[in-house]
Image 1: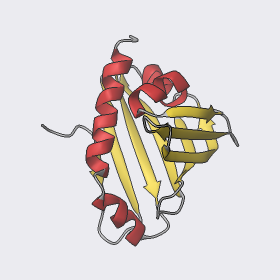
Image 2: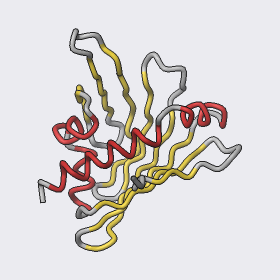
Image 3: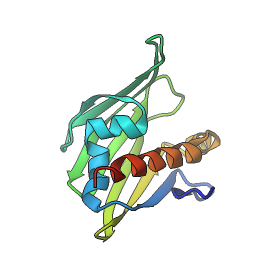
Image 4: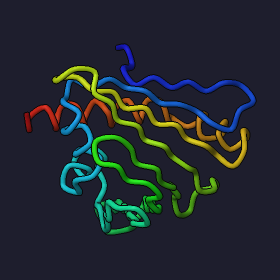
Length: 155
């Protein structure tokens, strides 16, 4: 099956770009990234905090069935323009990676279709390459497929 979420990672660079077109109006795509209840559904994690504003922050956490925390991520929002852009940091606890800088750009293609572009900058090309060795591309594609399915029902 074709991956609809595309990743462009040029050799030797400490960044990558993720793009995906969704069969969703711009407002619904943006909502999928800022409404805790929707984020929890497509990311499969608990949203502990989500302050969608400049200098706001967010915290995500996933626990196993026994209550052990298996994933914890957080960051600070540096820029927040509704239906256009979010600039934020992203950092995972207990991971060998430093914080990364993410630029999320939302754009309308037509009334029923929109595009998300995520530009991520890592501390080094080596760290970026480490991330790409993980099932990163498959994981984000699966998450975006889930986002599409869940948010389509809100139309």
